[in-house]
Image 1 (cartoon, rainbow, N blue to C red):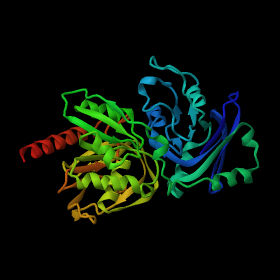
Image 2: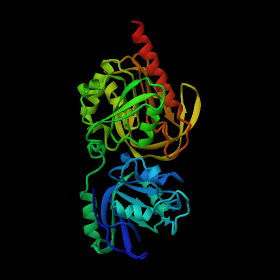
Image 3: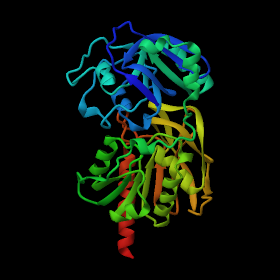
Image 4: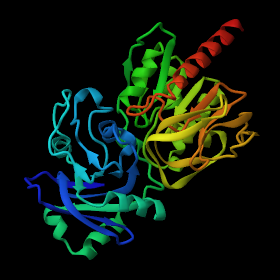
Length: 390
């Protein structure tokens, strides 16, 4: 929820960050001038801020960068994960005073102003991060320019009147409105139906690189819409919001599973897969965001450093197998977060389906989890061969 103006400002234009618990931090305006409201969350990556800002799954969130120096490499069109910056607001300690990268086409500051993103700089981001870790993610507001001079009571009133992230369905605000197709960039396997819940361009490029003609469908697509593209498999993307508020997409996914179409889901797609199997989801205290999250792949015993952005998780036993409450056979938690034992992946034994809670395209981030795309390709090829043999 954002209201902004993009008027002129000097480097000393004041700004204040207000949290719903009454915490107030005073700094300098960064980006557009005005007011923005959202859920304040922290991201731990020391690089990749452009990919974070343009990731649609950050919609509705005011992102706090734990790394102190941000903006050194500027912004360029090649690294964008979508057509715009999606964060509700931006918090940094020390923004770069000049850009120093040959690929830069504009400064981060200019990009924030262009897309109307209200930010704040010059505050103690370490103290703020510790506050969120202690109390959990909270609603907050950034007020800059004239709005920084509003009475403290009015600023806090606006923050506490803003909607909480829990219960929000935000996929409609970030999804495509019309289907589009990305042709296969390798030996063709078949059509892949991608439900766009906030998908990143790097994900689509990786799927096309496997040999799929990638059909990107709106989040409102029905099972009949999916069937209409004659898919060999279905993919649910990352995206913002509360998975408990996405009943329609869960119902469509159950039809996909009933039809025994191979399925791969990431991030939000993992949470919706869990719900389709009959599991519940819950809100994490402060979530996982950044490009340095350790995860154990229980299938291989390998520890991966992975890229995350999620504030919700699937509730499931992390040891052993269990039966799907909705009748999809044996299920196991395939990946586990090593910091807090959160479920980071699900694998079905009796239907061709699996998911992970993180981002295997890792843009930005490490490429430890890139093998999951190959695992998906192999699953689809095996399913095609099995069906051809019948």
